Length: 399
Image 1 (tube, rainbow, N blue to C red):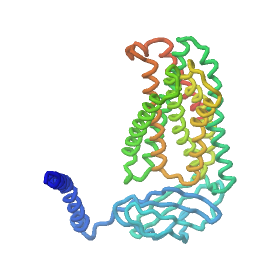
Image 2: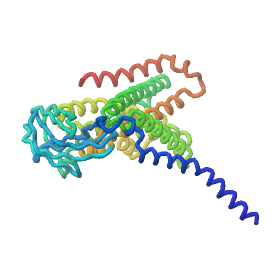
Image 3: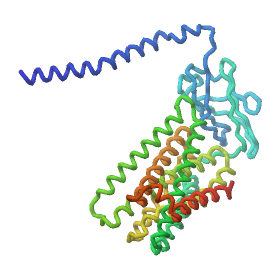
Image 4: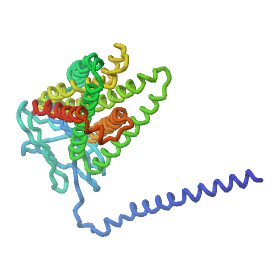
């Protein structure tokens, strides 16, 4: 009898908990079907139309534009212009798009390599939406050559520079305390600059994303989730058995730094791949040079916590791959399926990871002393400034 009453009480409690959700669902259904907003604005009120170009690729068949309906109302694509001339087009799956509906427009336009072109979409109500191709270049197509070339770019940009930076480990290992404080502070400065850079790039990408995705809020949310996720991973790694306590903290910190840099480099690869895929070959080349200079200093950031830890060659290789190889994957994805919203997510993952690594690094270097006193010491203050300055100058050199 007691078990029966307990079960009945539990069921009643669940029912009371679900009641607000049921009522809310009913209210939302009533609003959707009755359309009070439509009743207020009347039948003669023009629809709110907003189309966003997700991707424009040039190929042998002409121009292929992927378009998303970013507005609340249904939109029908009636006509397409290229350089002020009307052209036939096909749409897949359809030319009529509901909210967040997406279609691929194929326009058999004889584009000219190196020229600028403007694609204009005209809706059934006469509203127009434009996209400019600054320099026409054929988009890369999937194949052995595509994957090989972008893998090579990723190796140049991510793997080799990070590996070169790892060669500073013997120098770091011979440093006294003041020199090591300088190097760890320099590492913090490098990562701080990367964090600012990731935040800037993420907010820029958010501005280009369709408004319906609330990209700024998404960027901040994913950044926080990435921070907390890496914090949990770090806590788990510090409790693992099999790593001597003396070297565990340094090894875990180096692993977290490599992870954070790897996520950041994934975003860099995404930017390079997207630049080539969107026909911005000149920008892609500039990004390759700039990221290569940037990433050489990242290897130093990875090995700095290992100054007092015995490291095997295999461990060093794994750290280098973890920090540099994601550039290859990012370049592949950017060249194939780039979209502004995925760029926001990837940059947010990198930003959150780098922020968490900075917190871990400060925790380890400050110890029990007050933070202000630690930052006021000459090696730490100069190291922070030099780290930020190095990253700024390497970016400034290539514009």
